[in-house]
Length: 215
Image 1: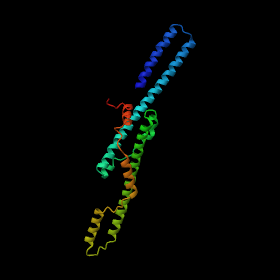
Image 2: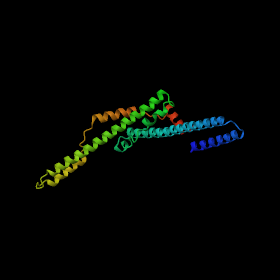
Image 3: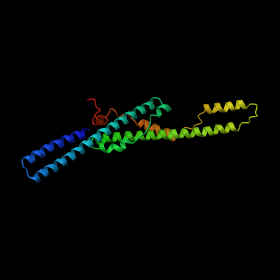
Image 4: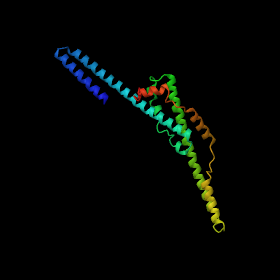
């Protein structure tokens, strides 16, 4: 809407100027030159405003992603439960999509800080996916093993009911899950590397670009 309003404003302004030039009998080639310059200026204005809006919107998305990531990491570090891990998601690699817009807005150290943060966040999210996939496979294997043990019971055995109950209890009580060392190691590495960046100069610049700074 901002672009449309400014474009309409400048079109009206140049329309008035064009009328004045004709009224003053300015030669046609000069009028054409003014019109060409006006069209070029408007095109440049539209491009500049479009890029500014794209940068602002991208910054808002990046700021939101950083805050969500830090909140999820804090939840995992404070309460290492399946519920806290559900917040560790990687819905869309927005930083990879928009980071070229911030090359001229952040200095090399600031850019590297944000880039490394999202690299670690993506690594943690992928590790979480691997862990949940491993857990799902283990549950399927556990269910199959439990079913086989129940099927193999002799129903004529006088202790059938007790044996059946013992197997059910074991299935419920025992995770039957080996902790995958690789997944555990990777998750700890990424968690330790994910320090908050919301208090850094780089994040303050992102807030300013997104027009979310309170100053």
